[in-house]
Image 1 (tube, rainbow, N blue to C red):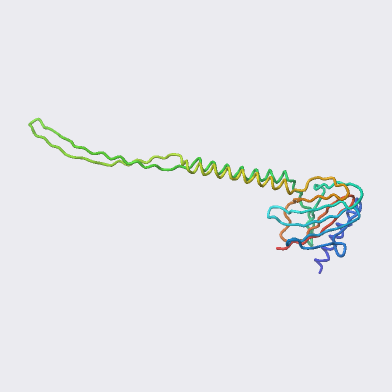
Image 2 (image 1 turned 45 degrees about the vertical axis):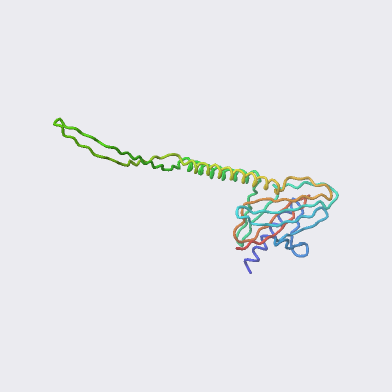
Length: 242
């Protein structure tokens, strides 16, 4: 009970701290519309100016927030993903998670592919294959002495030699692997560009959806998501479990 109370007090203090700069709406109780959509928990807050929906997922590399914002008022406003924030909360402390821009994710993926391709190319360049060659020779030898004596004989033999040459098959396979990784990277970056949430200005009745990334949440604990829109801080608590 003490642990639960401490976490609740942290949520309250975090919410109250935002009143100095903006009105805060916390997604809890009857004010929060929470439902499962295709197995994913989605929470929604609605005010006179906006509707904001959020879901959170641990991708294994990042915390991914899928966010939808609709302008429900009569004045246009901006949606700026970099102003979003996530606080990880335990019974003892709170920690603000780092926002990860799409460009950071792309550079990290490019470094990962470049490193793998470099190792692959180096290994293929060092690869050797052994070629074994056998040579067989035979013949007859005649010998004559000064006193008229003579002798003859037959001989035969096989010589084996081994030569190291570049493994061209390994090099061709390495080039194919490198090309496949580059193609996969292009698909990954195109997919990221298509789903990431961009800065947007919404006129009345317009909406925008996309994904915003943060550093991974601890394996177990609560998080509080802040989505500041049109002068209001929309706050969404989520629970992550092992």
